[in-house]
Length: 206
Image (cartoon, rainbow, N blue to C red; front, side, top):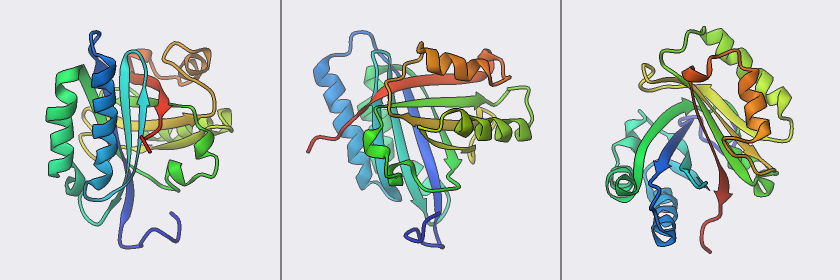
């Protein structure tokens, strides 16, 4: 954690991965992007990143918490986004909260060069030990030296998801890309035990 982050606050990541409706329009997508970036006004939010593909909408939210995660998750900003902005344009979604042990992804000097974001979450019923997940996260950073990776064990609803890794890459990555396929193949975790999504990073309107 950097010196700029108060010792009285904890750093965490909130990740939302939504499956988009097939008939969603360009106007609707722009509304979703704008609504997601508006979450920067929510309590405890440090920064927001948005990814968009033909099938998925990914929101990565960096949090500086002075208390429980509900400081953000129960806020009117968050509820308005999930229920009223996001809800009518998607067919399903999953979300995770995990502790951020190091710097936030956007604090990395190479973050402006990132072109895509991938999210991999380990489901709650995965038949793996916690130490195995930790080792995989470590191997992930070695395997992808040019990517910015934030990972950790979840801090809420662990019966649904036990851990998550976010990868910000300088190359375009999709769910079907060779890079992501190779990563998943080396996990040692059955594909059925994972949630996987990837999308191109979007920039906020100036």
